[in-house]
Image (tube, rainbow, N blue to C red):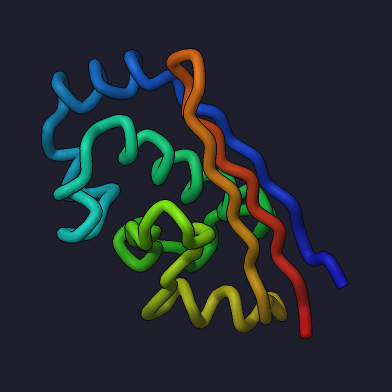
Length: 118
């Protein structure tokens, strides 16, 4: 059964400007592995984290650093790696499976998340 669906879109140029103005956002929003990626990819990961929060219906118990979207290669579907209290928050809400889709086009990054129960 579907628990929640979330979608988020990020203007890549605007996102890059925000990071340039507030470099500490990198540490707050992304894991060390994610911070090695180009800003375009980080914009998509930001959208992914936002879409996960929307699918959950809110950010209670969620920490940005505990949500990672690792680079798996061109032929692998994107996925979440969720740890710590954020994993506990998903368990408490009955989430057993997550599905993530990412896309970049026309200066925008888009993420779509579906959360399912067992």
